[in-house]
Image 1 (cartoon, one colour):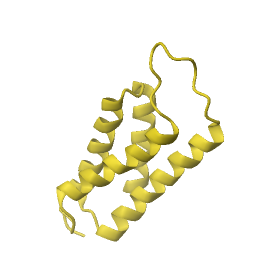
Image 2 (cartoon, one colour):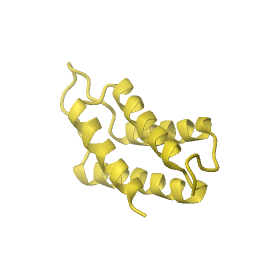
Image 3 (cartoon, helix red, strand yellow):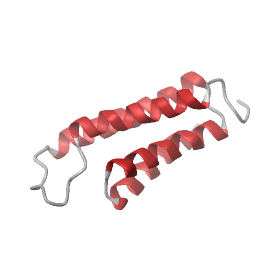
Length: 104
């Protein structure tokens, strides 16, 4: 597999941003003054599961090495934080992503 993989860093970043975009469409970050979200938990779980599965498929397809896998996780984290998701949500989702990407 190697350390670097067969895809550019920019492609990894773009992919991570697209995953966050998919999540934000269905489950946008909650503004402080807005009312609680009106999205079903089942739909959110389905979207999150789909995004994580796409990340695993992307890693397999592009044979991401150690550094590109880490870059995917970091870009994913910072995009979620940049949109304003809670720290607890970001940490839980990134932890799940890293665990899934680590399994062979």
